[in-house]
Length: 275
Ligand SMILES: C[S@@+](CC[C@H](N)C(=O)[O-])C[C@H]1O[C@@H](n2cnc3c(N)ncnc32)[C@H](O)[C@@H]1O
Image 1 (cartoon, rainbow, N blue to C red):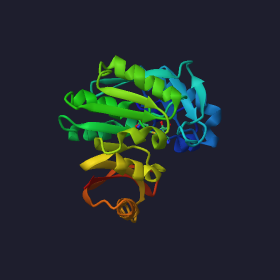
Image 2 (image 1 turned 45 degrees about the horizontal axis):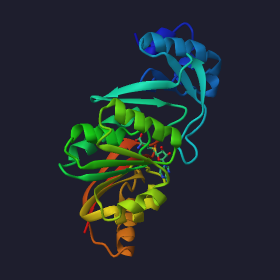
Image 3 (image 1 turned 60 degrees about the vertical axis):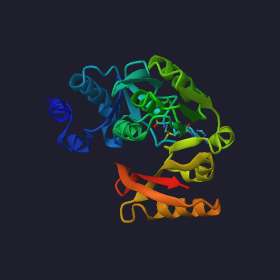
């Protein structure tokens, strides 16, 4: 039985109309949005979620947008006690606390897509690496990668990345580093075959660093928020301008939609090679 059917009789017709039936589940933690007009019924809604998804132990209500450098979110706990959880995804396990570190279960397909592209012998740099999902997915899929460096500024997320590398038995391959990409990455100049930049709103500010980290012929995966009526143009212009400023030639390999981002935008990825 679906959430709406379960809640018939507990919610009025108007309230049922307000109910959002899609929500994220990270491990055993469900994160839901409840509009103002439904807040009085949030306990009933949380209980219904646990009935329809019996593995869920904690239900959190979003109480705002993501904020700050660490891209965290505030929540109200409606049901349960723990916010630390473990996510199983394509043979990887990610431990994290949803209150302390960014993680999006919606990006699991994207992580696999990137991991599929990494070749034997590559040195890969994952900027803005969070609890390590890209770096670990890559190391698991391409055990012959030379090294996968994972740079993250949030010490809590970094701590989980170290733990996750251990849990997934890729500690020798994945090297988590805590600090600001602008400061930490100077040591990688001209050393990387591939740089992943999963920070779509602000990542463009770090493009010069990413480009400098590449060997000749290296590849950047640049994420950006593109508006629906003009999906790729801004991102392409930014990428071309930054390469030009550094006197580097580029070749666009791919441009693609990743996920919807609100009603009028998409998270997109531009993949380009720098010579
Ligand atoms: C959108 S999250 C992506 C996290 C991870 N890649 C994932 O997919 O789960 C962006 C991450 O970048 C980190 N971050 C933001 N600015 C940074 C900087 N200047 N240097 C290093 N990490 C940064 C944030 O703390 C956050 O964990």
